Image (cartoon, rainbow, N blue to C red; front, side, top):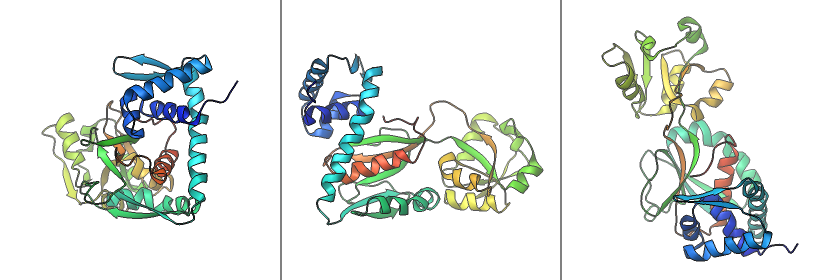
Length: 293
């Protein structure tokens, strides 16, 4: 069988990542009809159905999922090999919150820079939202629910999965926590997201709770590790301290449809290979079950 054209495979890859012909067309700076037509031609050429067309988008068939994984890797390898032909560095401006930078990004950034020496990362740590046009930001990591604004694309990095954590010594003293009301009487550590207030208002209104406030999740986690109380923080930020036994988990939020950490970027200037390399790297650092939206 003749190998499909690279152009058709790029369109298939974009449609498979977004599960939407319109979003794929926006990424590739083409019309929706052109992308849909190329994908139909690819299916006809292969003699296989790659997508199920649905009212609100697409779904990969089992064959489509199997085919997409190696196609995506191959395209990424081609882009990376092409970039290596030009030894000059490519700069990416990355906007993240200070706590995400301290607890998740910085410990991993050296490995990224070693794997991709031609990409220079400029990290801007700020709680404020980025303006991709005026701030010159290429990529941002933000917490919440999409959509995050017009002309912006978002890929789920990890669900929030809030965890109540404390030092191992305090954890042994407190023992098992089954219900949120069981936190009454314990010192709770809260950050600027006010997650304890939101959670307790919904589940244990009126119950007496003592809280201490910090403006960043990283500070709340450090205070918890030092035995000063119980912090409520995203699992993604706490994983390293938990694995190193600096923190222990007393309770996990298992609610459905939680907010999450999203990789956010403008849907203009979409053909920037370095940005796609970093998006793929971010996703490789978390559970493979996490998908793109």
